[in-house]
Length: 149
Image (cartoon, rainbow, N blue to C red; front, top):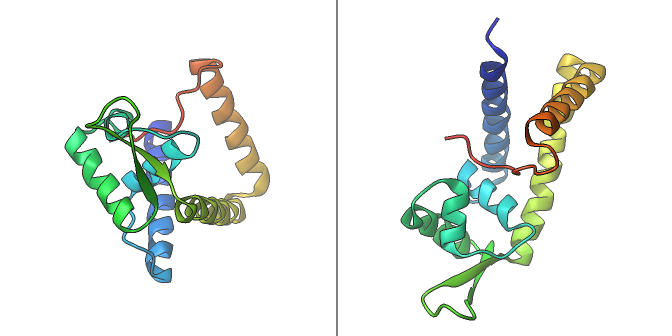
């Protein structure tokens, strides 16, 4: 059997692939995992493209490309920065917030399918154990969801 980090990575990839397959089936824009990280990052804040790039661990140019796509699809809105004329704040639009709710429901469906495959008690034990491990490593200062590329 593979080590735990490999099993976690393979499981994350399998669930992510199923998630994006379902997005394609219903005809949404070609959203990629990077877009999802931006949605989650903007859920509770507005941010500049530089902030988004730092969060994703990518260049400002790569972050700008992602923001441009989300803007074209109507998921984010750009607003003037109050003190830096070169920068803009990026926030989620209503469509972006609605997408996050939809995505949360889709992840919940995939989690339920996992529970059916491995058992609800097993899934509950895994969730409790992973949360305890994150608490052990990070304490109260949880870093939040970040890409693993």
